[in-house]
Image 1 (cartoon, rainbow, N blue to C red):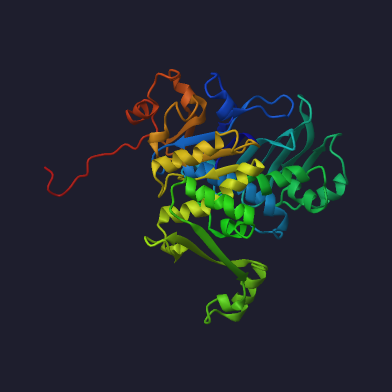
Image 2: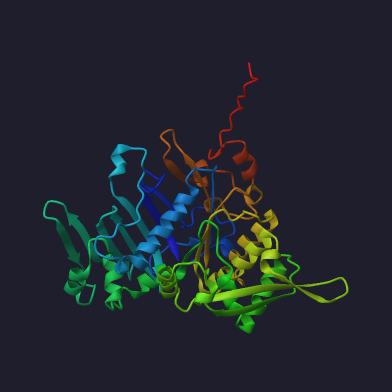
Length: 425
């Protein structure tokens, strides 16, 4: 479960920006749109968050910051000494061009609240810290800070953090996270934190997901049926889905591809499955007609690709993070997808949805609480600012949020200018 995410000096985000899933004031839709975590001292949390803003305002950069933090946690221990970290600071200010980038997340894993973060540049991790809240008060597990003068790290290990700490410290490279390294060296205490990043945080790429995950779930009869029900509920006239798979081999790669490149790809994608996906429709005469999934509309293909991650997240209580959810989808379908997270029966384990969108038809108080809406825009110095709707104190059940947003009351709208042509006086 995600409580708060903070990022600083990442792409268009210059100054520290935070988004929070902590429930604010107001008792509207408490039973459907919020939940009470079991972790001690944790307030009620929200099941979804929608982020609005014009094109190029930085919405995607907020989500890419989550993806980058996740990637560093999962993969940094596998990098080689001297490899650059994939960090892109705010480049439109000389003060930040060489400054460190910072990520921090507050979350719940296995009913314990954690606060974990780090700052880094392309060459090394500058700082790293982890606090645990097994009770209401914080317990420091570890901190790590780069000493530029001595060219080494200062470490501080908490008494409640157990294991061969010195071995883990000595094994942690400058361009790797201590959390990742210690887990690679069998830290059972840190494993739930690592697993939260790897298994519970599901951040889609800019183009969404490939259909492979959904296709893999179709092998199981029960999950196959659930996927069909999902597609039916979304008003697609797909009667069935047929999936065939085989292991990736050299025969799937172009004949003119260099052999050394083929060998590398096959090694990197070892045991990767290739899927042949077909959809079944019923003809006017009642016959089953089969189509390649690529022959379906882009919206239908997107919904099929969404079905697996959506159902898996609802079942397991994942955090689903999606950019431009509305793309190629009807507004009613967007509302349907969001509503699954607000339905206690469909979402028994309190999965959370974070998404960016331009779809304003769902920007209303029948779908969201006021604290579930956030906005994103750039200031005069082209730096991204992220802020909640609650900053404007909209009236409960009375204010038309869509109309107020489109009228400019909340900002975060594109400023469209008149196009000058050669014929203009």
